[in-house]
Image 1 (cartoon, rainbow, N blue to C red):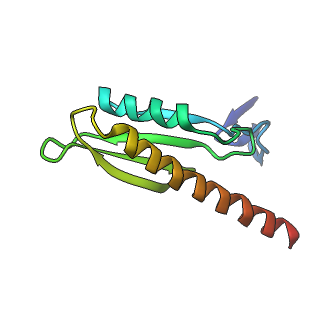
Image 2: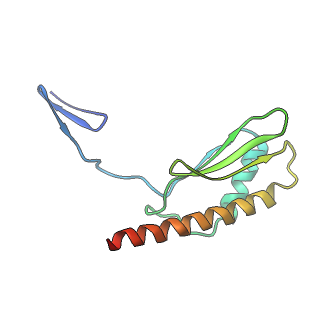
Image 3: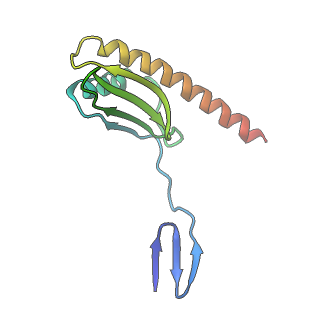
Length: 122
């Protein structure tokens, strides 16, 4: 009996920790809901100038509906929120918000990369 269950290999009555076979990185995930959110994501991706590779953390763009003040949109990098703002229901101003988000995202990724380099030295 040999099955992989949540990172554990069961061999008979014994469980042995299994190392992951591969690691996925460098993903940009669109979890927006509205047309305005999708436009924000497209503007962010189109203007995104950094090289996305397997070494880049996973970037997720999320959106939550808010009927009173427009939807809330935020960007997470490996579950850390690096940008959050409200987007209205109209398309005006979305490009500027995407540019601001990109600048904040690039600054975060640069800092993240430098931190990893410093940790590798130790």
